[in-house]
Length: 114
Image (tube, rainbow, N blue to C red; front, side, top):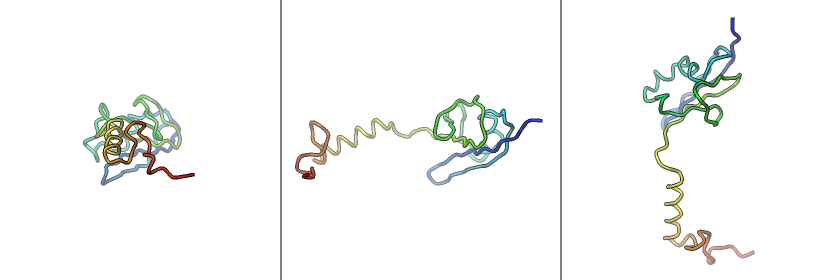
């Protein structure tokens, strides 16, 4: 008989979040815990070959084992590259005069005097 541990499995969409608590065997893998949770039936768009997974915001492999108190998180794919979004935001700030065109920092007229 194997020892049981308590874990959580979570997935979130912009309009709906699910957090499931379950008791699993101590030697269970992330993949087996996700399968046992039933979350794949609730969210058919989850594809474990495509979606990354992690424990407490740290990406993990599906073959890793879980420990007591772990929260398995299933991540959605990014809709935009964060670096590209940041670059566009900086360009817009320069165009609007909210950022120095050379340094990217605040223009002299906007800096607070000490």
